[in-house]
Image 1 (cartoon, rainbow, N blue to C red):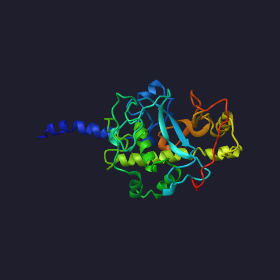
Image 2: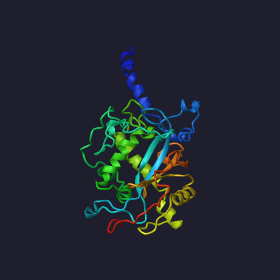
Image 3: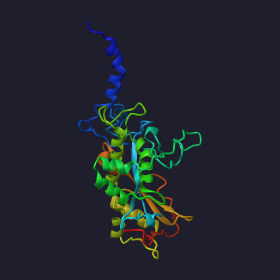
Length: 313
């Protein structure tokens, strides 16, 4: 006679396995993030259409890029790519413009957490400092993604610290909040399946690929150059020139970021999009930045400085 006691004992495990499996996004409807109806929100698979892991809010995405003039590690061979902006990251903001961070401390590999709590507030959960060094380089070599490693070594550049610090910061702070990269550490879906040996490694490779795919859709340097806007230490521009040029080229108004005490030094751009299905597939619809549109000085010239001697190649 069959005993049902062992089967009953297995039910929680079977339920857990089901939550980790059967996320075949190619067989499911795809929706644009931030454009889902209330009825759709109740039925779609979060492994296939992104939400924030801990809040279930749907997402708007920001492809962020840097214009830096030096790395600070030129003597160690770290230089900036010629005639190209560099990658900052790919961010999942909530549709109202707010955002979460460090959503899965089980995947915390950031050597310099900033801010150092999960909420950004003093009473938030402390984000532990990662002291294990570079995990990206050995992983990409392990899975024979030498081309991907070469790309990020050239175009995903940090300043004053090793590049992997930035890669792992962006992954731990931002990628862990994408439901489509989820591995189930919070009792949520494991989008990689119960049979995958190391879902965390898979999610890290997937995020890096998504960042690169997004970055390649925004050739900022070329767009500006085609409009006659090139780096210079003698010629300045106004904010409108950058906004109008990049809006025309990208299809929507990006956030234009400036640094310096008077906010006159062009330093960063954020291109906002809704994504169709998983961001891994890089099907993005450009959308205008909501307020604030820029932190740059609107009454003074904006400087798009040339790179320092010996800082690019």
